[in-house]
Length: 86
Image (tube, rainbow, N blue to C red):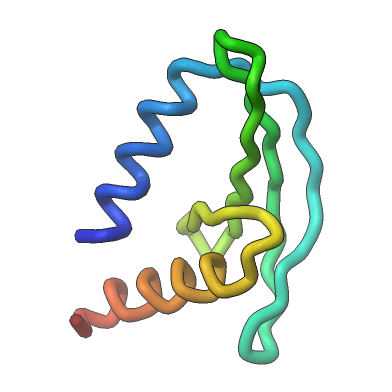
């Protein structure tokens, strides 16, 4: 449920912003390396923010770039959701 709420907020914010830049990279957690895309967005007021998308198999997980704990939590939430755990 938390993931869905966060994803919904992200979609809403992204709809109100323009993409300024996009870079590819990797994120490693628990011995696995995943491809990432980091996008920087600019709001109508000129302020910017970034989001990182981690590709996990056929799914994408969104988190705050540079915040390892946020990205690891997003991966764990996806892992648990896919396995039916709570």
